[in-house]
Image (cartoon, rainbow, N blue to C red):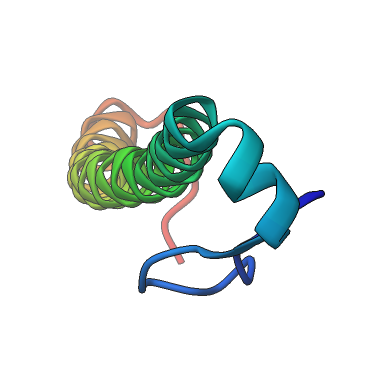
Length: 100
């Protein structure tokens, strides 16, 4: 019997148990099974960390892009207000707009 385990949030090595009979009858294969299990779990944990790093990087980039877009929108709104004021001034001068 072989039993291997790793806590989903664990960062340490895996835990495994091999029955004395399995160790006695197939020591080389048991060593290989334990090593393969450990490599599998290590790869899964590394994959999860890589995904978290990738998502964190994408989130930071999206926040920066959002900040840049917001600054651009604010600038365009300010420019629009200035242009509307200038247009209204010309309309008043041409008598197309009633002055308040």
